[in-house]
Length: 140
Image 1 (cartoon, rainbow, N blue to C red):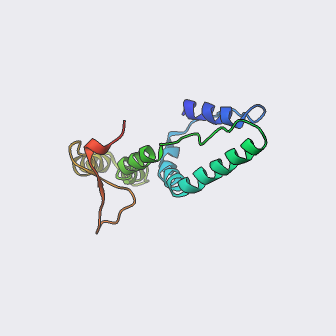
Image 2 (image 1 turned 45 degrees about the vertical axis):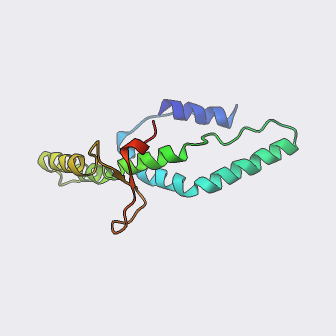
Image 3 (image 1 turned 90 degrees about the horizontal axis):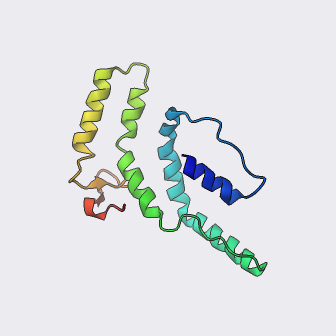
């Protein structure tokens, strides 16, 4: 969290800084929606940065470029890995959840969706026509 925040503040430049007030672990639940939105808007983000760089070149300034080139595949794989975990997180934070249900849910996810030598279903595929990411295709 700290590296991402400091990178964002560096990118925004002087005078735009703010400080991180606090970190709440329950905000992790919103991570899937945020990552999904980033992946949906990725082409638009790249186009915006290209246009911005073109404007900077016309003004005689140094273009900064897209801050995360080549990260699309990393985000896609991370979201595919995390997608089966999010229902467990929601269940664990429900008012009627108990420890046995949580542990059973974790065990089920581990044995079905997160088997180390089995392919991982992509986050954006339908159950009827799944597309899988093979373990050897995972980036590091």
